[in-house]
Length: 339
Image 1 (cartoon, rainbow, N blue to C red):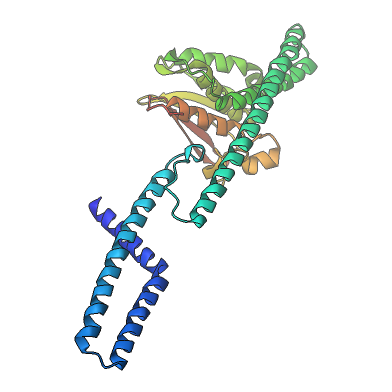
Image 2: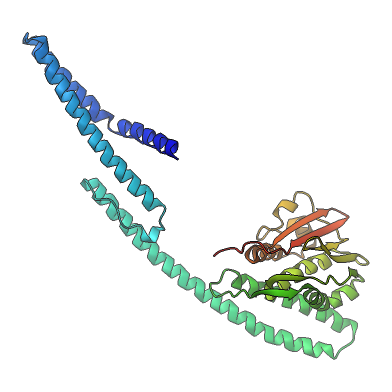
């Protein structure tokens, strides 16, 4: 640390000298002029040398004093840089009119930034409130249609029920996206029965398993995890939804638990292209499969990654084209993300 401070001081000193080189050159020229005049009047050499040395010494002292003052000011400004822009208001005392003008400009820009931020924040809160209300309202007719379809047992009603489930899934995704970064988002961290969450998720997708003739390999895991039930359920449902979406008829989905507490959801689907794998968690990225089959929203895996990070879990994906995809959710409790 001390070596870094010395290096910083040396860099600042060089920068200071470069900024004041004109004053130094002028001072040296004045000394030379006086020396030349004394020499032309044939004054003794000592009469030329001593005043020049005295002036040079005073000049160095004034320079060092001004350098120290400039360095202290520089340090205070660096401390201000670490502060948020809205509280960056304790400027060092202005030494000249230029500094007064610059500080006035900065304060005016701060004020405009605060006004703009307040305006945008208000618009954002209004937008979130509107879409949150819309999501809750649209859920009511979806639930009503689901109840009507429960009394029907035809191929047409099954197709409608499947599409209705997709609509419900997308609506839930919108609600999760709205709540993800909201200040009032609540996380209830407690011990959960992992088997119960998995069974509920599988039951929710039972129609897709049956209609797609997709086999499920799942043996009770008999494990408990520390997490938030609502958000962890969403992650598992999203991964299952993707597995069903890209697994062809007659394929297989397997759910297992690896040591120590890593849940694995594997499918025998079409797989993910190697060039797409590094970006599957990027918001809005659909990759080749999403563009080719027009089934992806580009938001599901992004939400899964964000939720896992906030819950202290880790999610990773391995895939081979034409073989299938494996999604690993490490459910060991890591330090939770601090907002």
